[in-house]
Image (cartoon, rainbow, N blue to C red; front, side, top):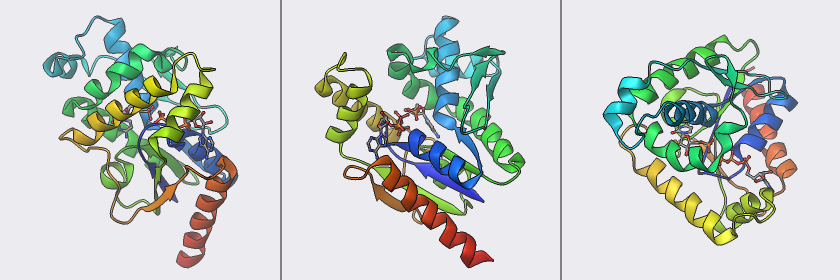
Length: 222
Ligand SMILES: Nc1ncnc2c1ncn2[C@@H]1O[C@H](COP(=O)(O)OP(=O)(O)OP(=O)(O)O)[C@@H](O)[C@H]1O
Ligand SMILES: Nc1ccn([C@@H]2O[C@H](COP(=O)(O)O)[C@@H](O)[C@H]2O)c(=O)n1
């Protein structure tokens, strides 16, 4: 059972994927955290993230490791837990440049496929290109969306309004444009993905909907 959950920034992929995996007894992989971890390492080691050749050259150096327990997601680089630092504004602003580099993607995609293949009961994998490129044979594919206004309000709320809704909205739109516009496996909905607009749904409603889709698919293949 492989569940691919893709979508633009802030649509609820992480919250939803963790909850779906926990409800169904599946493993969980946050591929965005992996690109963030690679970006964190580049910034910490003085690599110019706007120079694709420099990023490509350095991309084999850090060892990025992800946990797959949805109740205790973990991400580390060279053995150091980076789950806090990868959420910084600096990393968020730089991650799209790093994730657009084909050598970075090749390493990550290989790791993501091996992780999915090793999951004992199945896995929920979230990202931007899981249904289209990483795991095109996924059992269930979901593409989450939500209006930019709703996404910005949710993100700004997380930061207790420290960054305005308008600035958050602009940053989300900029990141989505970069992720959709890159040449190698851009953010895109797979033709056979089910689109779920989360703008007017609670998290529980989104999770219920996806769990029901997975259970329907399970029943159909039995
Ligand atoms: N259906 C929902 N209703 C209300 N709030 C939600 C819903 N889904 C997620 N949220 C909230 O929206 C915010 C963004 O959610 P989350 O981090 O899961 O999104 P994401 O798509 O993984 O974001 P990113 O791509 O930036 O990593 C969080 O504060 C989360 O609690
Ligand atoms: N499959 C993926 C997942 C993520 N990215 C890039 O990582 C950035 C951070 O993702 P979050 O989900 O943690 O916000 C994202 O903006 C993409 O640049 C990717 O390319 N492919």
